[in-house]
Length: 160
Image (cartoon, rainbow, N blue to C red):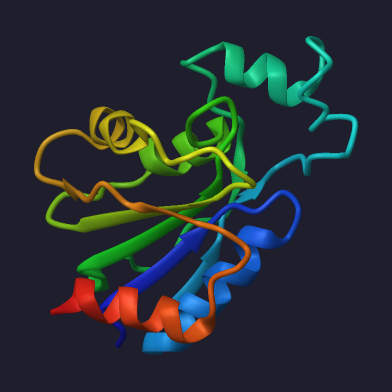
């Protein structure tokens, strides 16, 4: 049984690639956070105030439904949580994942993909969503230029 889970939401494939590389680096389990309704390109149009993603991100209490959950979250001590940065934070669909599962006694390490935005205060928001008894690291923005070897070094440093 693995004690490390890499859970991720990816809208365009970048975060999915990073998550797969992280999971492979330490033989961790991989879990995709899948929205019940996948995002279309029109849904992701951040310039349109009526697009689905803009509407969701405008409501801090929005929890879009997701499909599935990890079979046995209890077996994991460490959860790497990956997502693209939307409007300076994790997407609302990730909030659904965080609020529908019990992470007490776990350590969450956020990582985000972004063309330029940093991870900001995302860890603070995640802490407020998961509540007491969960350790949430500050996390890291991972750009497309990172190598598999760099990801492995980062992950191994966290596992020590």
